[in-house]
Length: 136
Image (cartoon, rainbow, N blue to C red; front, side, top):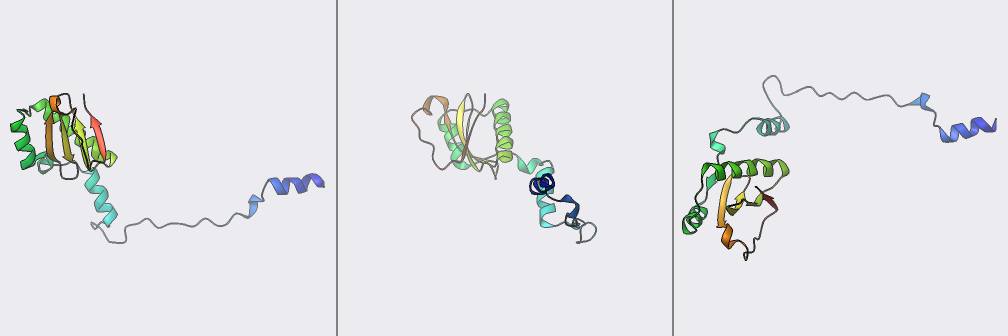
């Protein structure tokens, strides 16, 4: 008898589990209508169109010109890929460092805020950023 008491203490009685509750996951908004969550999910899953291209702020354009930085297709593609990665990770105001230059990027708006060439980035302080991505 002592043995059954030990088992009752160590192994709970599983024959009296509570009933499982059913959760209704159907769309109660009607056909074709989406909840706020559904809309947000769709925005994240739908590929971005041409309106989601990288924009250059006036300040960044001025810095690129002053510092003789040319934005070729390779550099553009590196920045585009970096912004896509940063979006996935939740970056908002990010520093992207490429072999040519460093860029402060407003990730949510796909905008390059400023740029500095490789030769001048060593002594600079980058503030108000939440993430950094080094691209090779």
